[in-house]
Length: 333
Image 1 (cartoon, rainbow, N blue to C red):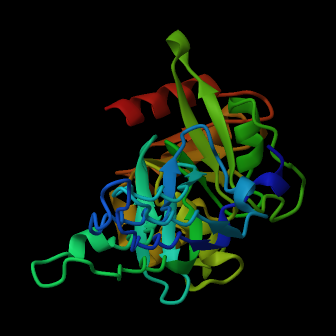
Image 2 (tube, helix red, strand yellow):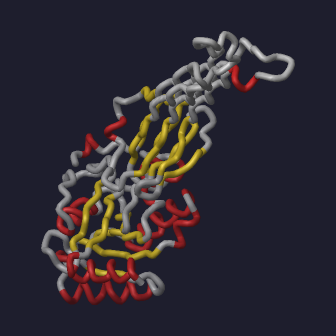
């Protein structure tokens, strides 16, 4: 999937169908001149549904489908026949889609399961035919109910990526490079900050035909939680990851300080981030000889007593098997 095809935010207008009118038909047939009322009910208007589809990874298919309208209910007929229900509309969305009311910003619901179906806009109820209004004092009612109107609303669909592992790091930390060597994903890679502007997903093939999903989240900068840079646009994708992989290059001036900034931004955005499993990965370690690595390890043992850490090199393919083993163990403990 190219970066331009990854769409995680769309605004759409949805309109359910109006209900059909009830019938005022009076029964007439040979030898029965005054058969009484037999008007049927109108059909209900079509609903607009949202349906979860695990085969979708993006909202790209809705990028240009800005108006979605369900069908109107049919009018009632004679012989107490009910009008046809309006055609329902089904909008398929990837798992992790959050639905918000555009006017109020209120979160309406989330789609998290494959096949999960929720009504986004309910169709109007069909009107009752004159059959329902007959009585001993009014045996020939010549009125029926009109159908109720449908509902219309503007909604925002936001995708929060559903991945097992989220790659967290500053711009140009090497996240896209790591994703490209762990998976068959082909993210954009270049030697300047903010190469990645959209999340990239990749499937890591593990032993015995097992796999897990890893997401390259665009680089976080200090102040992201307040919306600096692309702020919340990046951070919301990390909420769904069960494990966070913090990637810090070995040539960083202060590894602990950079890690603390990343954790602080996540915590300010959502304190529940602290409950996730964390793994610190020091990248670009092909730059170190054994002596320098031993010195760095001694420093990290003091700074990271409670957080596991590893050394890898994506370019030199060092430590990647151990990394996959560690992530698999963390995901399945």
